[in-house]
Image (cartoon, rainbow, N blue to C red; front, side, top):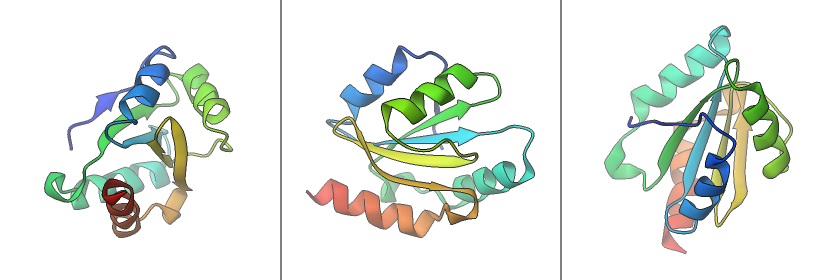
Length: 116
């Protein structure tokens, strides 16, 4: 996976803008959590660029708690970890956390968005 790192609050506006052309996936990761590590590994193991017309963005929420809080506020989601948010047209259209993060389901949602 070709992760773009989310390391400043200013990037959130860029993500919103970019999501008007290509959906953006934000993965909020806690580097000390085994569930988060397992979920990230599973997502990376299954990810196929040719199946996903999505820009993946990685947020280390322990290093960037302020950004994590802003993500929750900006996209009107409750903070979870691990958590994915799929951003389209500047809004979160899909979010999941913990073991509800499922590549196949994410792929189907991304496919529907891309076909609109």
